[in-house]
Length: 392
Image (cartoon, rainbow, N blue to C red; front, side, top):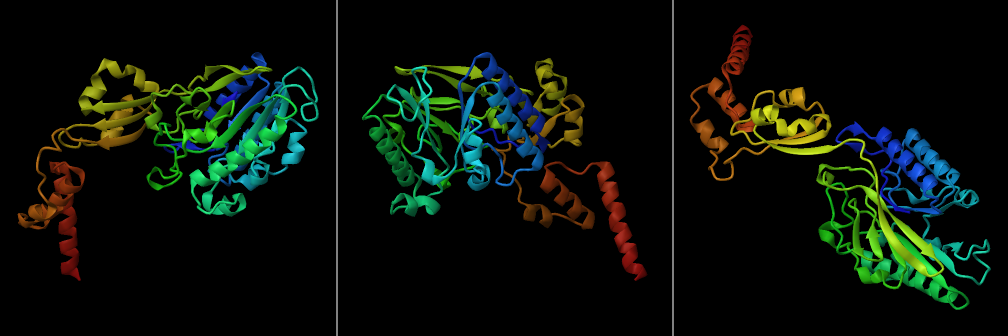
């Protein structure tokens, strides 16, 4: 099973997601047990931060115990959000329990081997074998010299890494049939990104071409959060949960691979149940509050853009009376793009007194004139300042 980008410890617009992440892991462990999955792949960004909290580390511990207890081995690489050193701690000891960490550069061409003929001697036998390689996140400036490349770019270091893997495959294939799976956390050209990925480099320079993965039986990619197929043998599993509203239309899931002595067979999708729907709504405030079409969004996390010509008063409070989990509120007044806006300096030039200046500023920054109550409050404040000045 190909998974990636768990981002344990991440929040969603200020809402903690640890419970939702635990629910995903419960789904994953149940599926692994019910379907007798032999190997679970995690292609980087296991954590959301290099220094995860104690409860987050405990959740990963529970996940690994659950997966191995369900009968699966785990092969895990580090992503750009992970601390490779911390994630790779106790890797040799964990390997004895069926958890194989590939977080060090020196190990990228040292595969985890699984016999495909029902035997147990994967490393010293002669029967067909599956070799799973893990390329940890490669920061070009830090690894270029170690990989023997002159140019510190994602393309060059990834090309050098895959070349090492091909060399190891060639040496092993001389005496037996070897089928290969490669894990990599990178931005491969052709992938469709979403807002919650953080750029690998500015302007897309970090994208690597698909042909770097030619010749491998399957390449399990991580980094992009949308599950997608770049070619029959190169795929992103995407994140198991939505981490931005740009992912509202994603069908979150994983890829399940059938592998036998003949190689990589069928690859099919597995879908995860979302703990909470996401709603991206747009319209005038009164329409959103009254329209029956939006009833489904009342229990969803909401991103709402109001199109009223003037910014409504207490917009967030009123929206939350119907959509209590409105997390993001934006304003895009209808006609704003075609109506020339009066500059603040022009408005200021027409002000006749201090109250006009204050009311004009309020209108300028929020897009709505001061009402009578607000104008009275400003007038009272100005009068208090005037009287204080007189008393001094």
